Amino acid sequence: MRLQDLRAFLSVAEHGNLHRAAEVAGLTQSALSKVLIRLEAQAGMQLVERLPRGVVLSEAGVTLRQHAQKVVLAMDDLENELEDQRMAKAGVVRLGTLPYLVPTLISPLLASFFVRRPLATFSIETSLSARLISLLRKGQADLIMAATPEKLPADLEYTPLGPLTMQIVARVDHPRRHLFHDMADLAQERWALPARSLYLRQWLEERFTSVGLPPPKLAVESTASPVAFAELLRCSDLLGIMPPRILDQPAGQGLSALSGEGMSWHHELAIFWRKGGYLSPLSRDFREAVIAHFAQAGI
Image (tube, rainbow, N blue to C red):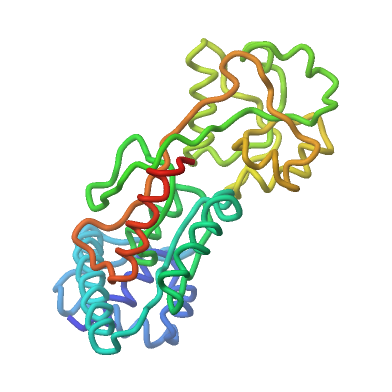
């Protein structure tokens, strides 16, 4: 099977729509259909089932996707390593990070790193932990700095960096602020929160359920960083969650943390990479710089 055919098939598997998959793969829809016909002929089985609104993988298609991902990642690793050896250049680090780490942690780290490696180049993607882990597993990032999930995927490795604090916040002149002493006092409040699929939301809901309360009442949810809700929280009576560092920055002005029992908690920040995946010398050097920085300065 051709490597490019496998890449195109993975695009179909990811998007579930031939038109969108063809755009991403840089093919016409007709060319993509020929790729699928060719792969199905080589497999001797149907790989996708066409539905009115797209396509889904057959059982054989799921099997092909699993193996195609390994083949494509291995080829990408080989090409990257050969390129490093051929060009002997400083290279690029594709770094994924939580958005609120950029101004207070990533920027100072990069400033000191460039003193030693002035020709280094970084491509930084900011997102929440679940998407960062997905990007890393797909080979679309070299390193990520994210919250440690309860169950780490078997194809990743990580080094803990230290605890990150999250806290419940409200505008400083919230009319019921003086009534918020414990989690039960927040049961009737409405919230602006990350989507339920994201770790931050799950952690908050656990704060409620652990004391016998129903989940927080939702007003707004989004896959964006909690920091994106700062202006909304300033202009409403909604509650939200944020790391304390944000409250010291312009984005957090007009907001403050609630001081009641159980209204702040910690989760572990870590730096992750793919187990057995290729890391350029520059990426390995930066990973060690990150670990050393946090060992010395903490979060």
